[in-house]
Image (cartoon, rainbow, N blue to C red; front, side, top):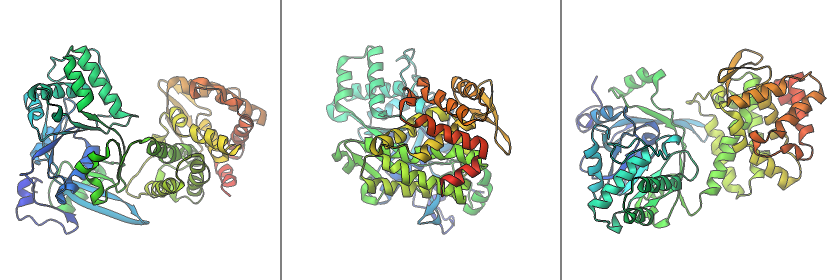
Length: 507
């Protein structure tokens, strides 16, 4: 079987009718350097650049720098940067699958073996954008990193070396600063990356003029990215390759939904005109409302609904959404309690919530509830507590289903035994390993240790949980009625079972 590459695309190969393939754009200049060759950026930013190129609105390509020693550079280059992207999901309730050969990547460099070629990119005046996704831990400052390393160990260190080479080559030209778009999933990712670069400049005793050039002539933009990328489809790759008719080692899959919120000057949106082709890219002066919306509705609905669904006996998000009772439970949490707790434009929230429900129903994504339960205590604090507290502030009452969701989470730890860095626990149909911070696992095990099945004992468990300032940063037992409400649901779950308790709740 022939391999996907530029010769195949520009030749006479007969591609499937449902696959979009454009002529290989080898004549387009490199305009972006990208740190990260993994699935996410190839299904997100590189896909968007590809679409811009199809409409002659960018006319540039992406040179990729492999961020770690072992990566996909050889594989990317073997296919001339080409790969097949399958986007799958529901649109207006109907299953949709879009297939396209993406051609926005020109080549992939390995800085560990091609350091000079990597720095050479900094000398190209046309390369004026940086995009990155080096995992949440990628934007960190390592005080042991050295300027003379080829390359430095961290991503900010590599970027500092790149920018310093550009600064020197163009003799501090203020017009040669770059637009930097980090896609790492941390809050204020642009601000944190800029801070790390300036820390390296100081650590490595680079000229003060360079630090000023970095701070004043480069745009470090904060961004929020959202798309579930399921990556290389191992379980179905043979069927996919047979349907394509060619071999592709870089097949990538993801959902249809996408969102890129970029906090930066509006004039930059004209240089990267995603909006002109209908992409869901929002340029804004303040990304806070969009982050709040995502964390509270998307992440919050996951975190609030999954413990109950898992103890109910379900295993995946799809099963949860298709279930008559649990599907109603999820929708009611979002509509009745999460959205009313957010002091933002309701139409914006409703639109996003509708998309979230459709995404949860995506039949092409098998998202296991047990994997979502990972580190649930910290997730609950960040994603669900704000909705509970703000609902209480706005309405003077507690949101019953969200309080119940906390009871369901606490119930996950019941009868568990901490072993190593996990907890051996059980639900009605089987046993499982609960993963969380060891101190949190030990706390929940201790909280349940004296439970005797009574309402009073359930309230005592609730009180211990709410008073744990290490979990929540404050004593939440002081909120009027919270102990009694939480205890009520713990008592019901332990005495009636999850299925009967949820059925009562969603009537």
